[in-house]
Length: 245
Ligand SMILES: [Zn+2]
Image (tube, rainbow, N blue to C red; front, top):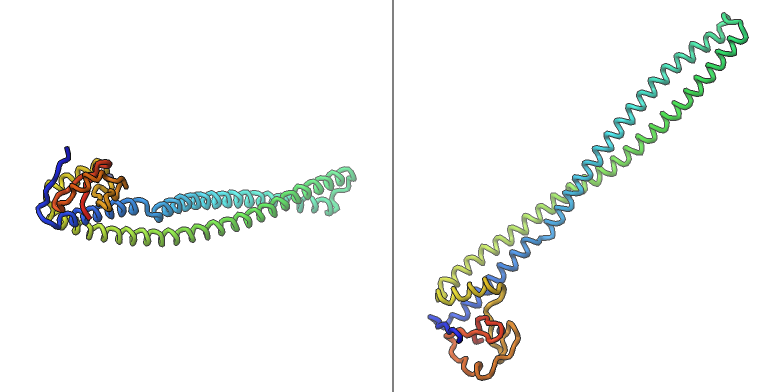
């Protein structure tokens, strides 16, 4: 048996539809607020910023370690320079006359110079490495700056959009409270328990004998009986509250 609820005044259906309109908009705004695109974008940007900071830190560490290598090799070159100078002095001093000894020193000088060449080549390679490293650091720092300014904009946009939604929600709460204060408590209870059970739209309007929520054609005997605008009926099919247009 259908439970019929009598309305206290003739404006009941309009109030109920208004209440539903406010509630549906609140549902919609809640979902919009939860899924604001900026939030996801900020999350992605934060992740990238974290990655970039780590990458830049690693690059600076690499640069520092290359500079240490460079310094160590430069020190070795200084030592080699002194050694070569000393050996060459011996070679050309005229103090050593033994050809075998002279040849030995000469070989030593050639060996030291080869060693020196290798170290000088290494120094050039390390300088290039540092240059490359600096170029990458500059690019990453530029990207980081870009991301930082982008995230600031996104955060401002997000705050702005949340503020707009909250303001609308606030107005809707006012509208909702106003509707409730004019609604029969029993109808409100029915409406709220249906909302809890079904969610979304729970008040349907009968249009040409059709429930405008589930789109089912109601039996004509029922349609004919629905004449009293002060009574809330229920749809035979979806059980939603059915009101006359
Ligand atoms: Zn229905």
